[in-house]
Image (cartoon, rainbow, N blue to C red):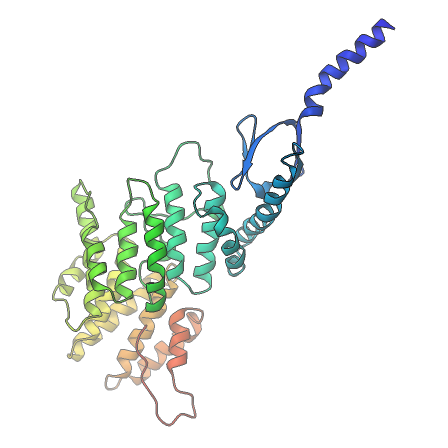
Length: 382
């Protein structure tokens, strides 16, 4: 009897940690019943071994009875939509990202975590896919803040969440700083300013580049020039100084193209074109081309058309929106020149087929007269 009783006592002692522990079931069917939940909030569930499980990984769980209702609420309000976001990112359903990402954004507005990054990454991709490029800047700045200073202890991001970021400036090829919706640019400025203010030092030049370019597109030249002047303020090497000068000159040219005066430095910028950073080069080509089109000399205008056509030739895959805008502008310019109607029509066909999903193609199509129209009008380039 003593042996049986002793065995029972030992058995209950061994089982005690398991019976008292919390129980979590993850979406990959892993069962955790030997860990305790230390805390949980919007960012996820913190275990007693300091592991943080984001809510999209948690299928269900049992915790202390006084915390169960709060646990279930966060799992329901955050876990399910966060899991759907992750799946849509993985399969490339970018158009389906906006609604759930916008719904989740209030939960993570003031947070710096993997889940907050996931939501902003989804929002950025969703806005770009739906043609709202200007609105995508603020989410990108928040993503940039998460990865720029490479804080220790952060796990490597899944492939579908990574962003290709220029390590020198922080600009991304996914969202070149050129905008075709002045109202959208105006509306985006406040969110970009707020996102930039939350980014810790040292801050990359991308913040000034994006903000200045949006201000320029919105017609606020004073604010744009203030941002442009600050690009490269902390440069310490000759290479960095030259790179910053390229960005400043390109953005200033974008301002001058929209003003009554033509920048006399266009030739100088074009002479340095091949020395510009890879992300700055297509933008410089675009603004140089538009500047040339404003000349009253046919030869200079044709030079501008050729400069614009370099963009779809060189950057078709990487920058379809910019390539479409360049084609539209070149087509409009050729229509105004003698004996260039067939060339203009060829560019319109290319825009309508190869770049049909771009903003330029959509806007260009709307501005074209219908076949029955008796008073054709010439559309302005985007």
